[in-house]
Image 1 (cartoon, one colour):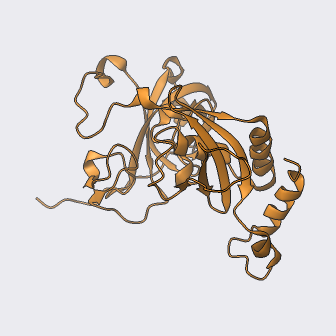
Image 2: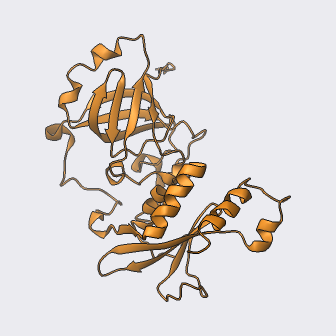
Image 3: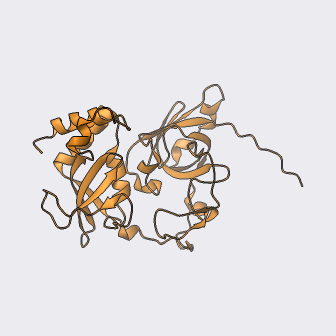
Length: 271
């Protein structure tokens, strides 16, 4: 039988602090209490469609992975295994129809705005549908999870030094760089795995610590130590990834951010 094309129109858009794919947690439940907003399109009677939804603690949000332009039959998940698995056996965004599904916490509803937390949905994602989460039919805690390890007990707590908190706030205010979300995402699981391309272990550093690692974020470097017994990651400092010589070469500014790095260094030069 011939399959006809299906036309789906978005019902709204997600507004979130998560602007880039590498900022999103591997599951929404790990995203914390940061608020996102689903803003539904006006003039569609959607306010009536929201009636009684506020009585639910959680909702399912179906949306489009709008930054993806292709799909892959095999993907390498960022956790659990380094072997390729079928995309239908993962939550990866590289899907034939680019459809995502997240169970998020419903905070409140204000007109056509639905406030949510514990969300891994990127800013600007078109929303396709919303459904209530029902524990009696949607939760099967003892179901087999195939190749996926049940590893919530292995999650590390990421702790910021006061200096780092100031540095993160400065970058967020000056350049809308959400370094904290990225660091938590990357370091909550296997933070000492220096086989990952973003993590290295410096051999010489004036922080004078043996148990020191460096996480790369674009042109920034995040220095941290790890306590495996307590399952804690301590972020010590954030630094520019440029050398003094590179910063002095103003003509070669591929990422158009050298002036930002210069201001950052001046602001935290005594740190």
